[in-house]
Amino acid sequence: MEKFIELTLSGIAIGSVYALVALGFVLVFKATDVLNFAHGEFMMLAVFLSLTLLVSWGLNFIVSGIVIAVLMAVLGLVIFFLVMKPLVGQPLFSVVLVTIGIAIILRAVVLITYGPVERGRINVLPQGRFDIGDISVSYIGMILFGVSAISVLAFLWFFNRTRTGLRLKAVAENLEAASAMGISAVAAFAISWGIGALMAGVAGTLYSNFTPVIDTNLSAIGLRAFPAAVLGGLNSIGGAIVGGLIVGIVEQLAAGYLGGEWRDVVAFGLMFVVIIVRPYGLFGTPELIRV
Image (cartoon, rainbow, N blue to C red):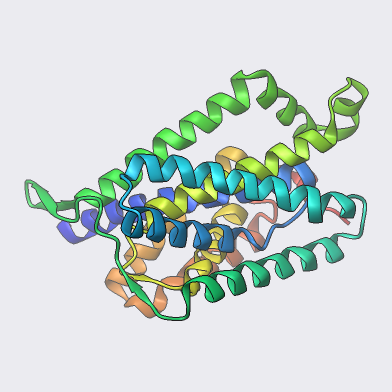
């Protein structure tokens, strides 16, 4: 029982990071109908930026996190205005291919800048554990969950309480009606790309202190967040959060009881089951399915 609880708590910690990535993924899709397959590379880039700011430059964790979040938001805006804006109205398949091209370019830039050599864990945050009865809990897991929870709450407050967030929400819910009310769709699209990249930046900063190895393969985390987004519903903000937590818990339980090689098998298998039973996800709505 103790092992089950420890694995579940670890799954909640890593699942909260998946939730951040899935949240950005869903936000871009909800606002623009674009599946951004470069989102994993956004997170991977944030991990390498953490390596520079935390290790090479010696900045503290909070300052580094803020700088990386701002840089990633700017990157999201730049990519939208330079690449994605001219593609508005183009066939979905073409736009998806462009996001894959962006992912390849970002990966190449990281390889050129940092080289192919693997780096070890960043040990800026506490790496020990503490006991609650017979259950051992890691400090880093608690920090990951705490910072992720604060980030999600801040996003929800922005999305539901601020004027800009409400405009973004209106565009996401009904583009034609929002445009008729004078809300700029282009501005909403740009903000969604900026916030999506920002969330990936926060997730990357956190994950850089959790992963034992830092290399370009970390972009696969974006693929792990994809089942989370699909599981919750690609047009559901709350679903992205719940989906991330579910995927994190299921992955950790699968790795703990079946072996690490089952991690992705179980996560994507769960996604396929949900798609078969409920194609629009646990919290999505039927209008997600388009003919």
